[in-house]
Length: 112
Image (tube, rainbow, N blue to C red; front, side):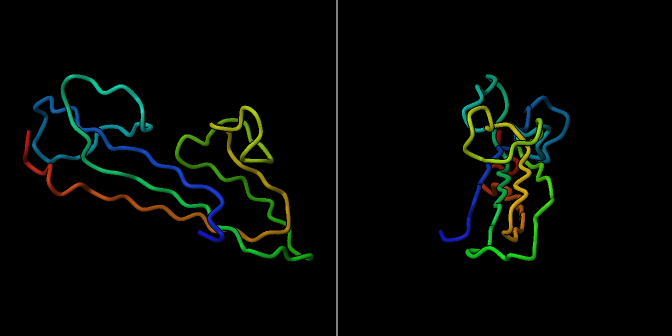
């Protein structure tokens, strides 16, 4: 999709430990993280970092974007070696918007 510079996904995990049948996540994990024997995925959190298609010569993006697992030392490129968990500090002339949304998985409510 034009303009989407980065997409991150985390899964909301409910331990199913009997602390309530709210199907509310007790923690968020990266896809591919081994699941414990008990519990279930009850939500999905998605982040999109959207970038303008054309740079603006008079604008400089001095923001540092920290989201999902991107919380480590800031990198200036999303594709640099070791940048998978790095915050993002582009320092370029593109405007960006970071949006996130959490979706609760309806079919797990009250189910064990």
